[in-house]
Every structure is written in C-alpha cells, then in structure tokens.
Length: 331
Image (tube, rainbow, N blue to C red; front, side, top):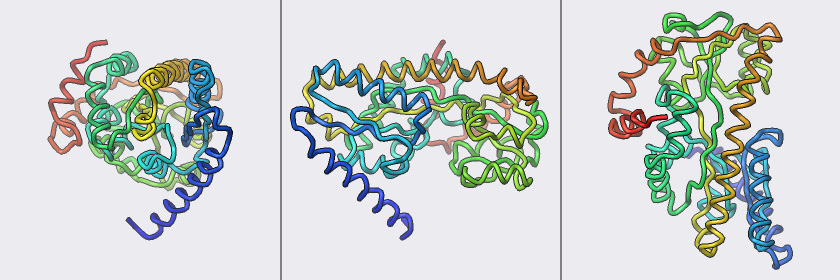
C-alpha cells in the first residue's frame, strides 16, 4: 500500500467514524443503520437504497432507522468495503469485480461474455451457483453477507466508427478500467487497452488521446460521451452487477426475524433496481438515435470465439468448472 493511498484511506475512515459517532448519539428508541454507496442520487441504485430503508423501518415497526449516504459521501468503494469489515458502516453496494478482490470467483460475471444476456443474468441471480459464490465471499470477508444482486448494465463499445467484428478493434486505443476483467476483451481482439481515470475520458476522446471507450448506456448518457463519439456498437461484452453487502458484525447483533426482514427488503429493492435499469437501457437506444448517434447492432459470436480461449486458459480468478456451471444455467 502506498503512503498516499494509506493517507486517503485514513481520512475516509475518520470521516465515516465521525458520522457514525454523531449518528449513534440520536434517540436510542431506534436502532441506526448506515447504508453507504458511491452512486449519484439520480441513479436507480440510490433510489433502491431509499426504498429498502423505508421498507425496513416500516416492517420492523420503527425498530430500525436505516439512513442512506450516497455519492461517496462516506468514502470511495475501497474505503466503504474496509469500513464494512470494521463494522463502521452496515450496508454497502459494491461491484462484482471489486468483490472479486476479496473472493475471486464472485467476479466471474464481470468478465467478458461469461453471460449471454439479461435473461441469463436473471437465471444466475436465482441460481444455486450464485448462492454458493455469495457464501464463499462471506467466508473470505469474515462474515459480511451478500444479500442481493442488482443488474448494473451491459457494457458497449463507443468509437468514431462501427465495431462489427474483432478486426475492427485491431490496434484501437480503447480506454478501460484498470482491472483484469476489463483488459481481457480488448487484448483478446488485438486492441490497445488504455487504463485511465474516468474523469479524464471525455477530454481524452475529444483530443484523440484514445480512440474508443466502453461503458453501459446509462453511463454513456450521464457522462455525455456520445458528444465525442459518433458510434455506439452494442457489443454487450460485459454484464455488470452490483452486490448489496451487509456487515457480519451488524447481522450478529440482529434477531433472526430482523435479519430475514432486512434480506427481504434488500432483495425486493434489487429487483426494482434491475427492472429500472433494463427499462432505461431499452429507451436509451432510441434516445441516442434521436441525437444522431449511430447505434449499431452487433453479432457477438465472432467476439465470443476470440475471447473464449482466454476464459478457459486457467489463469482466471474462477475455475473452469465454475465457468462451465455458469454457462450451463438455462434462462
């Protein structure tokens, strides 16, 4: 860990601890929970968190008051994961890929073409495999529990040309997050993956520092990346998920009844979030076309064929057996 990273993490802990102390000083008639995440207040995930908080208070007859802290107000994702393990915050959202840094196999769905689409994703959500991976994460994290999973969106490639086959990505300089799951796809098709901070992407595309980038449609809209890219190719190469994770320390202090209620409301909220994201994605295709952005349908089969050897190569954070079990899940 670098000294700079340690200092940032320490400051994040101080901020979270200060809120926690103030929070605990409120009326003792209610038990207080802190739900923290990095998403903006307009995102369905934040609205889902508010929904869960309201339902939890209602169904526990006011025994609990769960407050939601959005937009990294209590720290970035790494700090929130640390705070959860320390029992400073009680509930967080974290990406499946980020959770994979704690328990590798649970990141499997953040790797390219491990899922066939939204129906396959839903079948995985409801599968025994997902339950097993969630249990593995719980053991690896010291008891923190994955209580729900939400669909975050399919990632697509934007560029100033259509991307219809792997050859169209040859030598393409494409911005990706600096993580193995995201670097794998462009490397496999002969592109030049270029990790950089997300805040720099718009200007980098505008100035030609990079040729392309990849993100869900909601992000492409929210960050106005369509202003500096003429084409969105619907590669759907990664199907992103967000996990709702609850502190094991907090769960150990709750009755079985209240744990069951918390599980139910978090799961209900995740189902609502998933449907909201799906509906928004469907509307956005036409929204982009109305703004003269070329949205291109893509035959994914050639891309899948190129990426598959890497997924089966044995160097992934999940076993070949787990991958085959995932692919065998029927919609």
